[in-house]
Amino acid sequence: MSVLQCTDCESIVESPLPKHRCPSCGGLLEYKPDYERLKEASFKGDFTFWRYQDLLPEVRNPATMREGGTPLHKAERLAKEMNLNRLYLKDETRNPTNSFRDRAAALLVSNALDLDFATMICATNGNLGASLSAYCAKYGIMCHVIIPELVDMGKLAQMLIYDSVIEEYGETVDESIERAEKLAEETGWYQATSELNPLVMEAQKTIAYEVAEQFGVPDWFIVSMGSGGTIYSIWKGFKELHELTRTKKLPRMVGVQAEGCSPIVDDYLKTGRKKSIKPTTHAIGILVANPLQRRLAVRAITESKGLATLTSDQEIFMAEQEVARMEGMFAEPASSGTIAALKKLRSESVIDDNDTVICLITGSGLKATDVLQALSKRRKTAAVGAEFSTKEKILRILEKRDAYGYELWKALGKTMTRSAVYQHLNDLSDRGLASSYLKAGRRYFAITVRGRRILSAIDEIKVIM
Ligand SMILES: [Zn+2]
Image 1 (tube, rainbow, N blue to C red):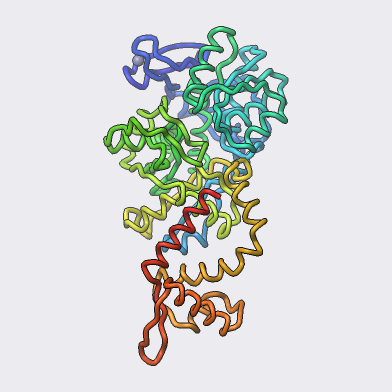
Image 2 (cartoon, rainbow, N blue to C red; image 1 turned 60 degrees about the vertical axis):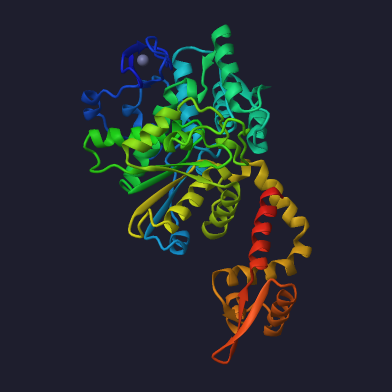
């Protein structure tokens, strides 16, 4: 019998089922760690999710597709660019269905098998639906998935190919969750929605265990927030290890949301809700209007002396391309937000250059509709874009500092003749995007206000393409 505890009134609930609501106050329940028992527990076996079975609620039949045990990628080029000593990306794209939710699916399906359920249901805006569909397929369980109108194409394709029953309900996942809660009550199906099953937190906390084994405890751990459950789970994992004296310190947790949908950051900053505005972001994985675990997310940030921050969709998209170009990792937009946030926190000197930072990369960019559309369009317009892109590159260099022709030719990688570079510079000057002046016998070029405006317009276009 597992012991659950209310995260609000702290009352104890014993239940064979992973209940999520406190019968006394309606607050959210979480599994209460039994530290006496855990002291004896050990990490054992291969470096995979089930290595931590002793520290999870009891499972008799572990379901597995070899989830977990994902690499901690040392991001040397990105770190250098941000003038940061050590940056690591926890690469959860390497899981069986390419997202961190495979950990949750493994534990949920194991629990459903133990309790003899034949059907599972979950509301999802993507990754959990894909994961649960795959694990249900492998273990012969019927899987019902409730998705909102907006869901990433790649994730939907996974749910379809794994043969789940898919129902579209609601504009955002908030409504899908209500629907799944009602359906499970009516039918007696196993409730696997991440917000409605505290086992999901237990599964996701193993990310912290793994990082502690791979690296130790970083100064900062950066996570994108949708429902708010993931940041809390990871914090829970680190706290447990600390309590068990397996680690000496705790990380500061940073929660990131998109400017267009930021209920948890608003809570944290106490800025109040922008009621009239419809929540929107291209990072569909974190598009949650009314996150059920918002208070837990704020608690993780506050307890850890961390912080919450916002990024624009444009910054997310730029970061996504940067992680790919510089680290060879194709991250989904929701998790690229962590890199965008890190850049911001570095530029504001909140994060020191000697600090160690880990960003959670939750899932693969191949799952996300926006990125795929933008990239396929870019391919079609490559011929038109070539000349445009040299001028853009020159402006990007001048955006940082004034430079003379030879310097620009070098900075462009000497890929064209020097006279071609001068031709571009003349064109830019003619169009009022650059100006020039003489200094120490050299002609220096500088970007104009109009040039800067053009660059930000290009950024805008890249987001909507
Ligand atoms: Zn309670």
